[in-house]
Image 1 (cartoon, rainbow over the protein chains, first blue to last red):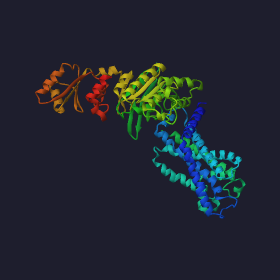
Image 2: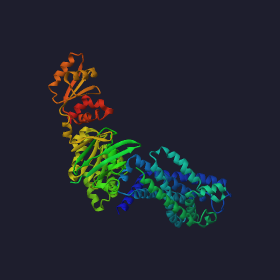
Image 3: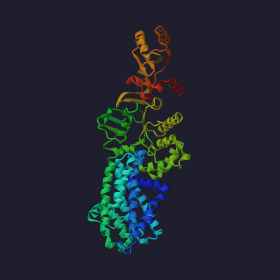
Length: 257
Length: 329
């Protein structure tokens, strides 16, 4: 009971902090907007007629990818932000509390994932405004898919942060984790048309399956012939990855001083 | 009565460097126990081991009857902690920080409101409780942290340098709070400090720590008694000569040079003052000033370690300004 309450408390703290940071919420519009409107329209015009399915515009193809990218960048950033907690000492207050490290990890993870989810919903709203066809059912189905995708990603951030003492290496994380995961997820293109070596690497990327699942949900039957895996297999892979990362994260928090 | 804290050969090494060396301390319930020592003496490392933040390299420690390694969770429930560095969430309000703490420690929801309002009253932060912590001054943050450490009614409250970095006025206030909190909640307080006045004012017993070891442990008054007498401070143009001369002339045993002063500990200081001046006059040593005072904990520390507690700021410590300040308090 105490553990559950602690979990809720830690979750609530993350969400409160996020919602109080208006600038972050506002700025979260900007990146997906640029990708969808400028990159999406720009590349879409150059590729006219060369897309794998005539029913899809390039913007529609990359929309689930940009959604995945938003989840990735937000999750990683939120996870890494544990370094702030360490730097400002708040982490100590949590670590000496009677809560188990598993609860502490899960509280942080669920809280940060919720923030990512909100960020994702903002992108969906943006998509609707831009005229991308997303049915209400698709929006509902996006929620669990986004959550499952973000769990593992937040965990990566939390684990890295538990090993780091300052934010100076944040740039390195951007170059070595965020961008490779993003580019190798098929967010901006359709995997089947890639050279085999690139396909093989992409298939090792957990985000690939998150993006694929989002495409299944948002694009519906149109996506099936182009899929990486069927929806349920995507979800299963994402779940296994989450589970693995949660175990790793609990371990990482155990060894954190 | 069963001791509330008991350590047995408690040791912590960092990469071969011994931070805490076979520590044996016993703290009785209700006591105010002080760990006094210069920076790097091992005070915080000791506290961190007692609070289960650090694992001892060897030896054992029990807090409230629980082993700090094997029963870490029970220890955590028994203790309150005010860290040396701030540990609050500055994007939450004061009240939110307190509620969060209450939830982390499993304080029943029905009691939370009452406890938190009482604590806020005690540390005089009621009117600011709904403001974000980032708008608080450092003294106010410290007060909130102090109050926070008590919300779950701990048996032992650890205060790691509770007033470091605070102005003298706020520090005096903090002392008052600590005394009041103790009075109201009947808890054992363990505090580390390198402020002598703080240790003297707040602690029933003081352990003087240096290089990871306890070099003296007693009541502040007893510690001072071990010095048996007065301290004479002489400033002169040639300290080496002066010390040599005085040793030859009067046979002083406890005489040393600290910064720009010769310090002599003697049983009866008063009658010696004119004789010291007289002796130096014939030897071409010019005495700038000569002072007599009661020994304080600083002298005790000097006595046991052979150096000042704040070696990095030794000059200021023995300046006349510091003396005056001490007297005003």
